[in-house]
Image (cartoon, rainbow, N blue to C red):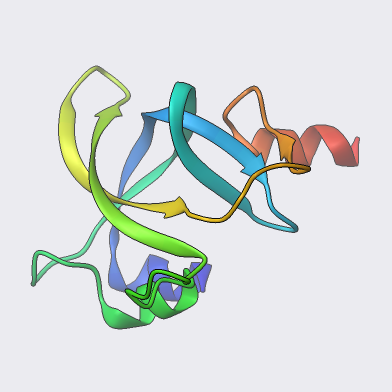
Length: 114
């Protein structure tokens, strides 16, 4: 999926949103709340919505019981520019899930492997 994203989208850089991040299993879940979550921002040429394959990959089928839902959120790029971007929000209970307090899933994975 990362290779496909690299082929079909343009990486805009690191960005952050307000929210909380949890470790679901081998992947993270973003939920609304106080805190900062960081990640990478990509741009797709073409329609204003991401391609359907990305929604499928993210477990977002528009159903209320889906694992994620897609919403437009304010995102701040490194350097301070703020734009609206699609974010996938985890919509199942987070009780019992480990919170990633740094807000950076990749850094948390690297630290747990060291």
